[in-house]
Image 1 (cartoon, rainbow, N blue to C red):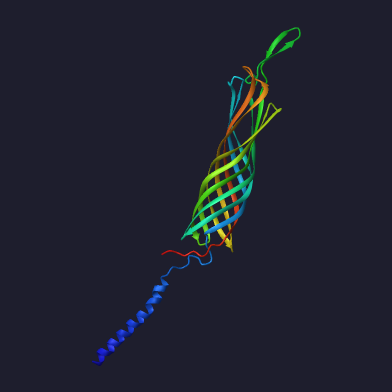
Image 2: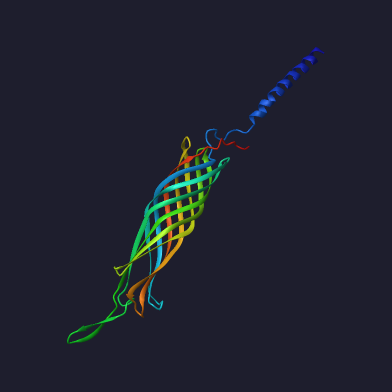
Length: 278
């Protein structure tokens, strides 16, 4: 009888100890911080600087007063230069994923040019010359040289971002959305006639980057963007006599694309700790 009482007392003591320990075990399963010292969620503001390798793929034509195409030139030019500007955005962090929206505006030094020439006798009417004692002879119309210079004055983007955290403080992301910008065109025809035009174009952008926390609320990023601003076009009427009647009109149609590599610095505004979900 004493043995049974002793066994029952031992079992009761063990059960009591387990019951007392149960709240502690449950408590350890409560949500824990993903990184108590860092949270990607919230607004941020920053600046950036980089270099762009732009491209203009152009088709230019020279027509007469009747609209007849006399000459067509197809070519391209590089629109390269330094870019710099600022960005603003907002992030939402959900576990190891970061979703966001970002808008930026950039000033650029991107410009380039290409030259072409309408050959002798193609774009301008023939003339005559008189050689004394011999006679009058026809002279083919003069060649018409053209220089086309283009530049990306500025551009901006409005993009979505989605990324994954390689560590709590290092983010790899993809981005894409709307791009817009102003393209300026200057054309010199026959070395004497200078014309200018500019317009704002809309297109798209895609890219990727990596961003890391530096300390405090500061982050730094390295980012690549591809920008397609679509086509810019225009026409310039000259006073140069055209073969077939009237005067020459020069028209261009250029597709503008850009490749941008830039570094940036952001200041993140705190929005509290991230709680991991299990």
